[in-house]
Length: 454
Ligand SMILES: *Cc1c(COP(=O)(O)O)cnc(C)c1O
Image 1 (cartoon, rainbow, N blue to C red):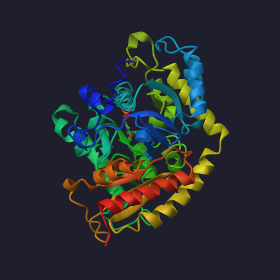
Image 2: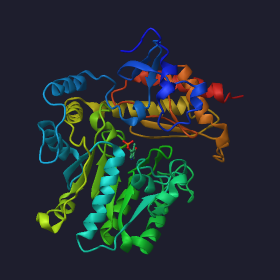
Image 3: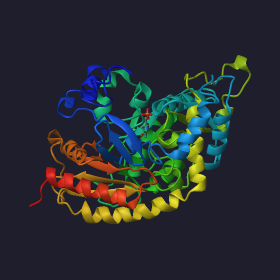
Image 4: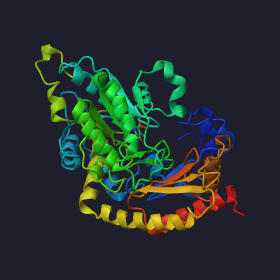
């Protein structure tokens, strides 16, 4: 360790570190919280202050920080094998993990291509779809469709199938020319419906796009049921069922990006399970390793795999690799996650807590005059700040009210990261009711401080 006597961690951080997704100037007013250790849903900083991590550290932590069972699995693995090349070589942890995942993924998904982060899994999925059509007699299918407000990662390909202005607009000249379909917007439904009484009238936008472009389209990529980065926008399973049917009719492949929704976040193992559909390709990451180590998997059907399977000389292989593919430590963590799912009543407990949380947030958060909606799926509960509750008129984004609520919540020891004026809980699946209650209380306090009610 370097000179620990001079322990100004915050200042030393800012000397060299460029943090993700941030205007670094903001750190002048709000320096980084330097975390020394963590347990369960709690983070402890170098000054001993604690924070309740209600966002699962960017949606990846699944069963609490420093979960004893996952810790043990990683410790055992590290003394056996830390890493080995994954081309021509394999390792026990990766094989066992593929077997374990094969038992839980939607029917028809069979082959597991390992990568090391979510964006990389999306890139692999796009390339696989493109090459699949090339090798099955459809070289004209070169374009991709995606939903507006979607988010699929930060690399150029993944960014170009996303359509959040915040992340993508200025890079437009660098990106592929994809077809953006207007996504469902259930909070401000243009058809005047609600999630409970609609027939996904908005699906006509997808039908229009398919009518025009399906023949030149390789695949459509969607975040099933929950557009996370768009502000936890939730739409009905019927939309996915209609999309699956339309893809089947037109030969467009369906990519379900379950990076955020996978592993119980929506109350089922995968969001696709709510709609009882299987995509042609599924991308998973985030919760996969319990939030321990970076890893992702692009899962495909046997049919896609078969289109690449040929004599070497035919040049049909998927020549795509990442150095840390199949990393045994990450696989060991992911295996421990699967073991926890198999041996503990995770879904049962989370369902009870989710129901209770909806009730409590309706009482404590929705009752605030500037909260327009509490929307929820599984344990994920989001609330949107509005200037006018009746008209759902948003606040001026320049006021950065979501960010202000975040800052106030932090001061009270709650990590409640905003997406614009949407704030959300996306806690570990084994969080307790008293912890959730603390989070609600602190969120309401922060809300009242930023937006005092008369
Ligand atoms: C986080 C996320 C990604 C990107 O994953 P990274 O590991 O951050 O590259 C892609 N798609 C969805 C839906 C995500 O939530």
